[in-house]
Length: 222
Image 1 (cartoon, rainbow, N blue to C red):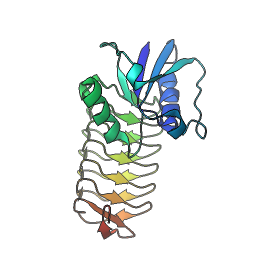
Image 2: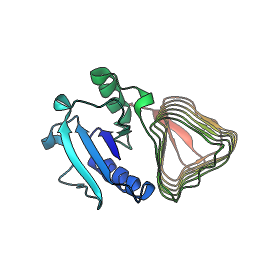
Image 3: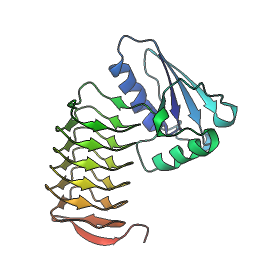
C-alpha cells in the first residue's frame, strides 16, 4: 500500500506515519514524502521521523513524477496547510479529490459524519453524529466535536478542545488547546481562538479572541 505525503513538516509527517501504521496494521506501507522546501530549511534535524514497518523516501518536488492512482496526504497539521495545497495544485494540478484522510482507530467517528478530503483525525477524538468536516480539517488529540456542527475547510482544532453541538466554524479557523465553544455559536473565517478560552457568543471573521469568556482583542495579522 503506497501513499504520497505532500509537504515536509516533519513533525506532521511523523504523526501521519504513526497514524497510517495504526490504521493499516497488517499492510506493507510505502510512503514517498514530496519535499517543497530545501532540506536546510526543514525541521528534520529537530523532528526526525521513523515508524517501524513503514518504508519512506524523500523526493524533491521538481524530481517527482506522480502516479495518478496513489492517494495523497497533506504533510501539515498547522498553518502551512493551505500554502502546501495551493503549491501542489499549481505545480501538478492536484486538487482535493486526490487527498485521502487519516483517522486513528481510537477516534470515534460515526457513519453519519460527513467527512471531507484530506482530513486528519488524531487519537482519542470524538465526533458526534451528523457533524460535518470540510476538506483538510485537522482534529488533534482528545478533542470533541458536537452533533450537527459544521467545520469549514482548513479548520484546525488543537488538543483537548470541545466544540459543542450545532456550531458553525468558518474556513481557516484555529482553536487553541483546551478551549470550549458553547452550543449554537458561529466563528467567522480565519479567526483564532486562544488556548483555554470559553466562547460564549458569536465571533466575527478575521479576529483573534481569547479569555473566559472569549473577547475579540485584535484583527488577525495586526
